Length: 206
Image 1: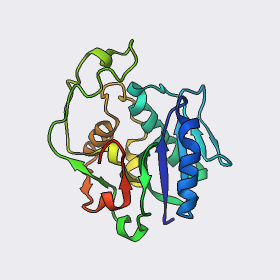
Image 2: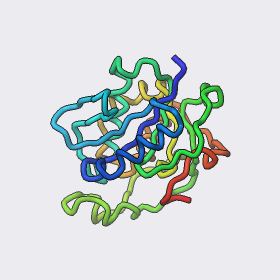
Image 3: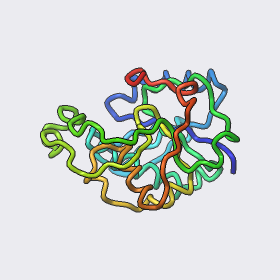
């Protein structure tokens, strides 16, 4: 077990717009170790031919914590992904400039571009569904040091297994912070990877 799986998080309304771009990008890197995730389905289902994972979850902005947590649980519980020890979570607009080497991250449980102070508690307002509590209310929960999801991050199988059964995803609006809180509760803190932007670029977070 020594491979990295790239996980692109998308949603039903956007997957047709980004699917070909992601496939072409991974083809250009001669890499088939990736999946594209969408939510809003009535059951969890993986299609190995299209490399598409469908998750039974809220597929809106406020559902990101649920979608990502359930994706991690599906991955570590499914034999389809047994060969992978590490995973790189990316948004569906991310550009991979260069594949990261397994030997450079094999000892990591969690890392990327980290943030160690309080974030914008109103960032999500206007991005959620109109009926969502968070669409009109700022986040009032705790902050811990986290790997910023907009840049992507690495998470190990070991880390996923520690948090996969959590069900408090409706309490934290920010997916990346939610994962960091769960890992912190299991004594795992993010490692700042200084050259991260050499490998991965976010159009929205340059």
